[in-house]
Length: 140
Image 1 (cartoon, rainbow, N blue to C red):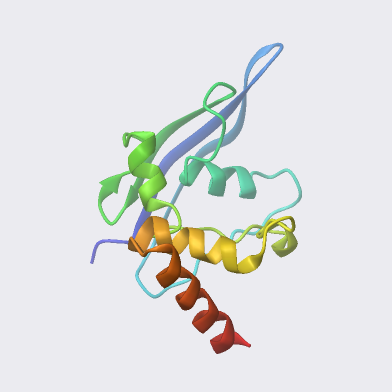
Image 2 (cartoon, rainbow, N blue to C red; image 1 turned 120 degrees about the vertical axis):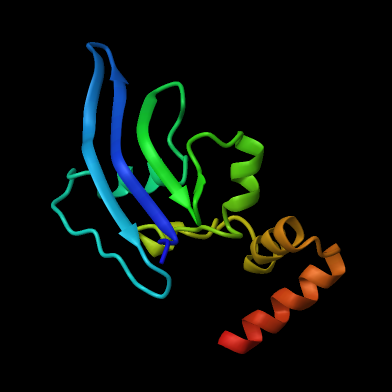
């Protein structure tokens, strides 16, 4: 069975004043459907950088990501940014280490949920607002 997410020989470097500094050194893992992967390590070990690189959320001018990242068999590192934007929040997502930073406190939660629904489910503003209310009522 093909894994949902497959990362092979992931290498991440950041540009510094001294050149490129390697941070992640050849990491490989697979995540099967219905399974959970836990990354455990000390502060600065590369857990967050790995997740950000996998989702292509690192700044391209200051980072270099090589290796292979596949979502359902499709290579993510080769996709144009517009295609990645369509995938993020729809087919792949990440809950950041600090959950309080997951939502923007300057925007209403309904607006933030509606934004995702309008972008990925092609709902009108009214439909997205109604669905946001329904979802918030469901989780109380």
